[in-house]
Image (cartoon, rainbow, N blue to C red; front, side):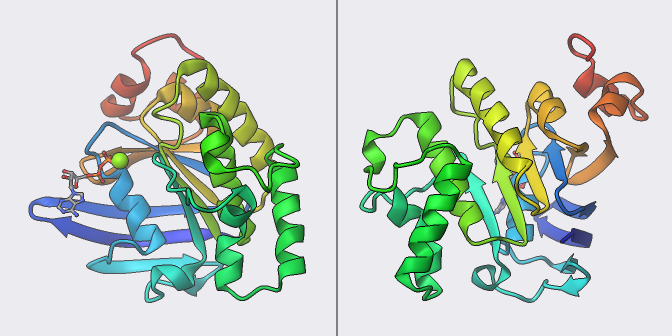
Amino acid sequence: MSLKASSLRKSFGNFTVILDMEVAEGETLVLAGPSGSGKTTAINLIAGLAEPDSGVLSSNGEDISALPCWKRNISVVFQDLALFPHLDVGGNIAYGLKIRKMPKEERVKIVEEMLKLVRLPNYASRRIHTLSGGERQRVAIARSLALNPRALLLDEPFASLDTPLRMELRREFLAIRSKSKAPCIFVTHDREEAAMLGDRIALMRGGEIVETGTADRLFNSPETEFAKDFFSSGKKI
Ligand code: ADP
Ligand code: MG
């Protein structure tokens, strides 16, 4: 599995996002950059939530640009999770499977597998309002992985959480990622989060990726002034 955007373009007035990037199977690409640099637009284009003006998105070499979002099987986790409050944890995780008419026994099995993966076993019948913020995040990730997506996208999923919880969830995320093969794009404006979670980091400015590389390379020998400024505002890693 791999995901590739080739000159995927979207304009809003005089702001244009142009995406050229590739994410390999099992790889996490962090999309970093300041507010307004086009990160969320990039996620929307890849998920099919925004229609590109031009360009190609392909998965394993197959052009999926024309597929509507519900046929792409690309999962997105947003900051405001959008878990369904009227369903229990199991119902949330199984939601997409039910829509795909998967038989109940199979759904129950996948829910159990996913809950084990995010280390919330026996949570299937818990109500959403009884969960902590961190538990909700893990349920959202479990739900997004249940469909065995061709790619997993996360748009600043931990941004609204307090620091200790954010640290814990970053570690959790790494553990979960080690068991999932889907190419992943993780959006953050936090450079430490970028360094910890990304196999590579793509740094965005003004709608375009200005530099891509490992955290070590971007922190210690950036090629652009912008990357230098973005990453050098604190300790080296
Ligand atoms: P980021 O997620 O990096 O903060 P966004 O992708 O949300 O950046 O926004 C990038 C730019 O695109 C902003 O200037 C924003 O106002 C503009 N933009 C995003 N979505 C729309 C839209 N639906 N209509 C008009 N402008 C938009
Ligand atoms: Mg955003």
